Image (tube, rainbow, N blue to C red; front, side):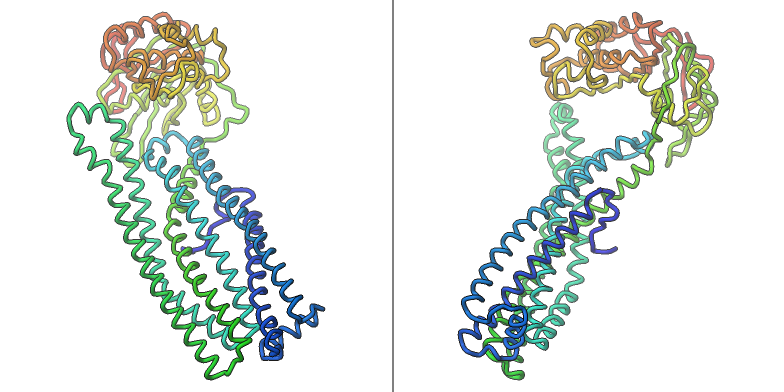
Length: 567
């Protein structure tokens, strides 16, 4: 795997242009520093009268050819201009670096989220969503840090190259010796860089465990408190942090030891080069002192480049995880509905010999299911856990495509484009209420933005949820995290009101009253009976008042329709 940055795989317009601008600014900054250091030679020559020394003579001749006077005052003025210019270029480079980093991280986050939203439900339901949350939050932040480190490594490399050119102008032999020595030092640290990449994989896995553990524990706080298992929950949820901390310790120790070894070996190389230059090649002071300044400047830069490169390799697994997720989600992208319109339900929804099989399961979720849901009626679907009830509901709601058979609304078969269009005519109420930490109004219009207050009040009345109008601030009452200000029954009736606001052709309730008391179940059942004839309703229930409200009951068992259903 290459250690470079895969700009071509990002799919983010404008990334290449930003990278080219940043590279140009990095080269310009490096050149201004190199030229400034080279000017030290003729300045020293002007001060000591030795401008015709080996390196200084060549530089003075070049300046003379360019029409620049080789005198102390003009050289000092040029040096000041170069320092000011370098500072301005560095300011522009830092801004361009931050712009590129933000562009990539935010672009990847948007692209990842868009890919997940547009992926087929079959692919989405097979994913562990805590891993996706970890990727969108933690891993992409690591990508941002890694990009910053990679850019730093590249700009440092450009500066080292400019210093190398300056050294060549002063003494080609010493410059080549220093370059070869630096290359040997970097090659010696290949193992350290491989270890950084491996620890990056370990850190990605640790973050995934952290998000999974915390997500499960936060969702189970009531159960944890009621069972008195706080100590076990603490160790279980925070165990991933211990793995992460250990990986970070190993990485920090490895990086620190590497820096120590690099600095020591670099200092030894510098001392050896100075000794050779003085004792063997008899370089004069006017040439040697700028060379020493160049190499003293290059040594920490070499260490910084090694460290930044290593940090990038440590963060790179997070980028590849992100690109893998995007590739997987985009490969499962649903077809665009284009100009397809939702079929109008007037007679029935028909399933003809439908079969569904999920990857990794030893038996079909549904097999040869044929069923007719008459328009305007209430059909209840019952069966044991794992019978395929939710899968059947997903087929009827247009979330899933059958592997065999067809689903048709009246006489229109739901192909891929029409299936997406059909979802606009379907409303779904699941067992666990999904409410925003926002107002009643915001929760209702989530499914139908821009709905008028009269429509909101009507939906609340149809769902036996007019209690919401009597809250302290009416429709503008904040509900708290997950709707905690409401009881379980009130939350479920508000979910039903949100569904009814869409005025669906098909309303699906998936175990929507299984955790409610009898009074709330009766209220919802009475609301559904009033809706009979206005829409087609599918109830998934095991028992209770909702079954009594159904026009007919059908049963699934092990993915097969048990016939006849009971009415």
